[in-house]
Image 1 (cartoon, rainbow, N blue to C red):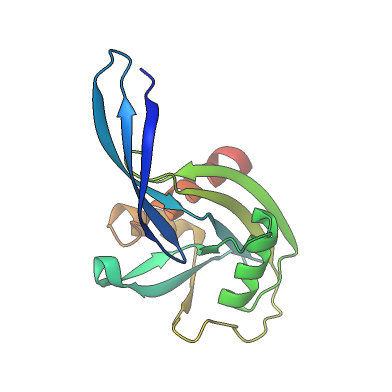
Image 2: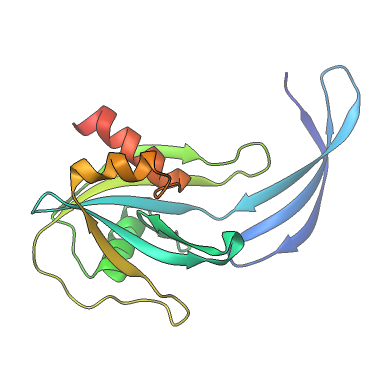
Length: 176
């Protein structure tokens, strides 16, 4: 069943997202409203160190009021390709430069109310690391996890972030 957009009202426009109220017409002619979050685009990077451990970041996420263990991620800048963004975010958040980077796929996190799409990548890094280059309001702790311990952390609810779980699944399907 398709829906035809009749009218769009922009409620809010911000740096990360916009909020719109859409009037839509259903196939049977009835009209209703849809609240839609428009996201400006992001990437996520699952990182494997040359020693075999996977690199994650831990940071406080205010919307859920807790620290989250996640893959490297960030917003795509205007004019930037997803791959360029992935390379930049990897360097900024971890201090590592990718020896190789491969696209895993895209994920839509909450298509019921948002068009947010995250482009997922897998990168490999070696032992050489620079300082992190974080935003002034960003505090990111780098965490290395043995591959065999990742399943336990997912099962125990330590790793619950959607983009991270999707990247792990795509990695296992495509690259293992």
